Picture 1 (cartoon, rainbow over the protein chains, first blue to last red):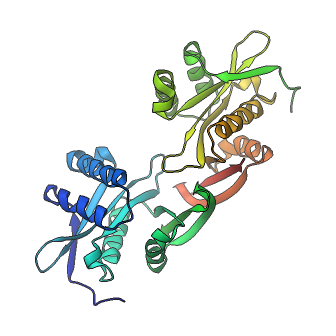
Picture 2 (picture 1 turned 90 degrees about the vertical axis):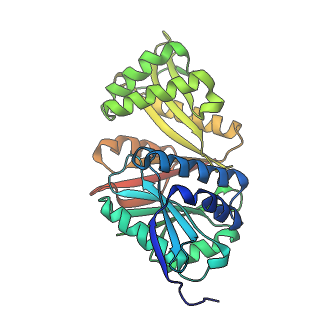
Picture 3 (picture 1 turned 180 degrees about the vertical axis):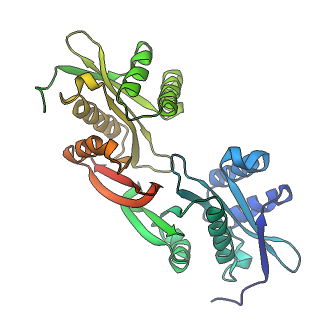
Length: 165
Length: 165
């Protein structure tokens, strides 16, 4: 079921978003407590010095009241001149199916292009938990470059998606 | 040209190997000064606390006089229960073609198995500089799981090799 797209703006995330970033990461139900903690540590690194940390956070805000609906985190891939990693893309469950993930992904594409890079890499799992994420990446024009059997665990493969800009 | 295999032993690297690790990394001619420095930093982390650092160094020693002929560095892949990364495999140019790389790789296989893991990942470049390394991995039973065009730079692809144990 897909509702009409919400009116949103995407912009670099701000210090005031910290609590909402943690809440959204937790509410997706996909990430462990440890992973949510990691997201917050990356967010703190980004706030302190985005360039140096290697992590860039974008927030997607409702045009109506400015509340955070989702966030993305990406960074240049180390040792590579052309690639960037999309580390996180999370949408508040209350705002899913309304174009938030798409808006964030398009903004990541623009930021990666602006950084002079031409590839976005997304490393994700074959588990059913990530089926909506995989479907989204496919819809957004990402290609499955590799599926590596039993990478995360027995029965849990690595799926490497690539978006060329 | 391949000489007869040298008599060697492979064992966890020791503090006294530090200078030779740096010298071998530098002498291969494949790594930048920055990469050699990184190898030494990883080595220091390994010496301080291998488990905590996530890096394990193996040395290959001449049976005759105990000198270091090459080294390997591997570690468990984060977020994965089954995979390990082979970060470095370097042989002293004076000892190349004599089975040092093979001995090190087999020892890495044994160590990864002993750690309860079943996949070794090797991320390398398609550039001619790495042709001998790629040929070695193929000979040792690694499969090219993905070649990603222009990943490192225009004309420099990512080659992902996988060894299943």
